[in-house]
Length: 527
Ligand SMILES: [Zn+2]
Image 1 (cartoon, rainbow, N blue to C red):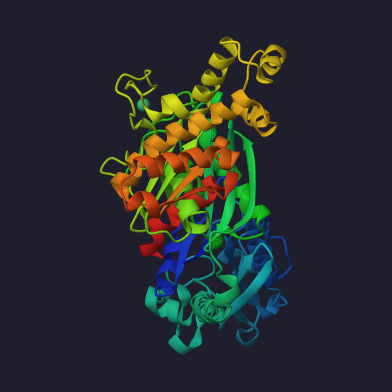
Image 2: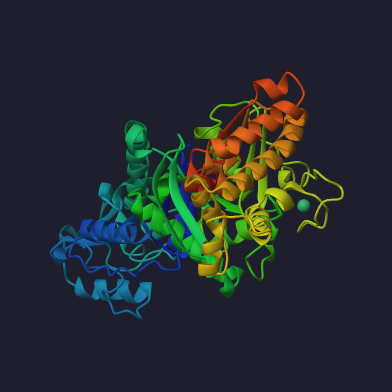
């Protein structure tokens, strides 16, 4: 679908073009859909210049394909200047009949054979890079001595069309459309656009999706191609304290920023995917709640963003998006079945089965972090006990290291704690790499605990690949050694022997790649 903005606020002009372009793969909008669209003065000396200018200025401002037109009457007795006899001819408050009257008064005494006149219409199509082409239509006639007929607008009551022996105001809409300058220009435009789209398809129509990764502190956005490659990405502060409306406006703004940054047009954006934390409903496009985002209760993300962007929008849970991305172009590329665990403040999960992210009936599937490995274990944030999140998340790992320090173990982490007032999972990792025994043991224990949970997942899903994502997943053998050992020890055969357990490969880009990919998947049948 090629998106084209009609350079008018008049919905009639849009539906007129819409009916004419039926059968062509285009979607039409009007500038009424773009509150920020600039007003463009029609002050060029020619119709062609005005149509080109209007299309180009709007195309550059909106980063869209824009079609704009200008029509005018050339009267030979008045020098045949095009565009002179436009709306401004008799002053800005003048009615159509004021204009006709003024023209007739000026032509008083001019003989019939000198009253030759023509209507002309020029239509221009532009994108941000320049004018793509123009199409023109003209209709030859002459100016009558008095007004005839009540239909039409502009100079229709004084423009006499000899082949039909009547003025334009006396023609039926169909008659007028078949002979008028505007009808001819529109048909020429349709033909040119049709062949333009056909021949230019390969390079003009390369399509992309936008991926958004919404977090409590940052929003990351990127333009992703259909092969999962990041073309351009950037991130902005979430400013979550300003509430959902402000955050959604920032997301819309970010979408415009990355489209510009990727040097593509909106025309080439198939859809926008938004990955958000917390429970949501994809069909309703609604986020129920989002941790770290104050005020986010039942937020209609899809509806709001579609309204702001005039583009298809899909919603996805952020861990599912990461799973999709790693399965699409990352560590689990092409795997028919894959489990992904995100290791961070909490433990998130995503399940890919038979090549698709498994959502469950309420879009709530894949909460792998809440697999309980001990019914008498510590209370988890979810209200249950002994969840793997309560054992192997970053805070849980830090707690275990702190306990070791308290017991009086000799460790470099003690001085880090004294200096900073706290230790982080990163401190533990750094100390472990430097050979600190407590730090190393802490990470190995996290690995073993994760391995116990993963053995359960392996028994349930028999996946080809398990991907560990984020934070500690970068700890290498120190973590993956005990994980694999535990899975082999506890998992059933043959699943526990055949499964591969790998670190994620896409890093911070997984969220945007996955959100874009999930949106492409959602809308692939409507392409
Ligand atoms: Zn839990």
